[in-house]
Length: 79
Image 1 (cartoon, rainbow, N blue to C red):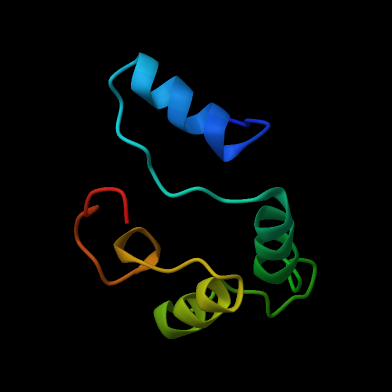
Image 2: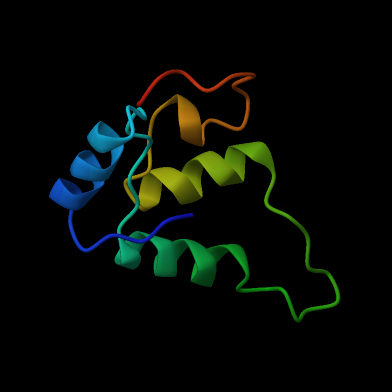
């Protein structure tokens, strides 16, 4: 994971290195994902979210596309 100040900086970095732009996650989305994903981590019954729960978590944070689909068997471009 790399952190950048802006989307422009991401695009510039990728262009300089001839690297495709991958899905971009904001700090707010990352924090929301961490809070949701690990909210029950200290409970005895804690478990990893099921695939359908993952889809709901990701979608609720605006993270959509093949990269965020736990049923996808490959990464499809820069979606």
